[in-house]
Length: 270
Image 1 (cartoon, helix red, strand yellow):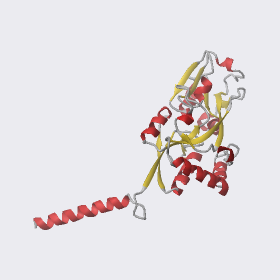
Image 2 (image 1 turned 135 degrees about the horizontal axis):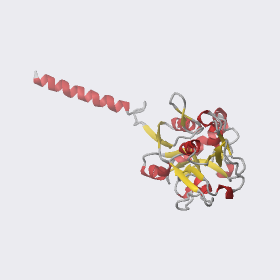
Image 3 (image 1 turned 30 degrees about the vertical axis):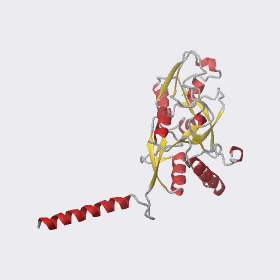
Image 4 (image 1 turned 90 degrees about the vertical axis):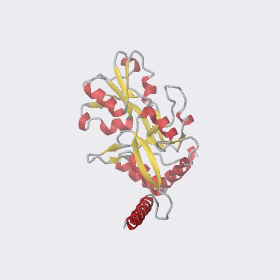
């Protein structure tokens, strides 16, 4: 009886292992490929809707492209200051989150393009100053003197804030936290991406937040960042070209109100 029980146990264990392996295989019997996308909470690029589902232009585009390339896609919320260590260590495979490609990082002055491999630029952006509707409209950088200015640490905003003198600079963990500082009155101004500003200013929890129109800031470009030497950069570029031609990019941009910022001609980037 013990021998029969032992054989039965071994058989069940083997079936269990086979079942587990099957769950980690593609339909063709090969090992299922997964890819992890690093992001921060940033509407309209990557954010949760009212039901708690992760949505946004970058979220949907990453999902579509990597699914087409045969990957199971996972998303990981990261601290923006850790983006390079995350992608270099392999805990994420790419940084796909309104990632400005045409700038250097203020902490070391090194161009971002020297730290990661960027895809084609697919969207334009700029930094934007936000204030409360009761705040002072600034028209010159000198007017920030004596003011508290919140911004996401290690973001493109850091470059603009670094040019301001006599301010109380408030680096925080994300752009949304910078907005919360502004809303709470612990900062007089917040510097965030223009696309985020247009998505939230005057709406929902930020009805009393307005865009400060008086200060002009240079244009920026968004691209997807991969670890140096990754073969995924070229593959995603091919998909961007394909999606630009078949209208998928345009449709997604229209869905999120980004049609005017979308780039679909990559001829000068090849």
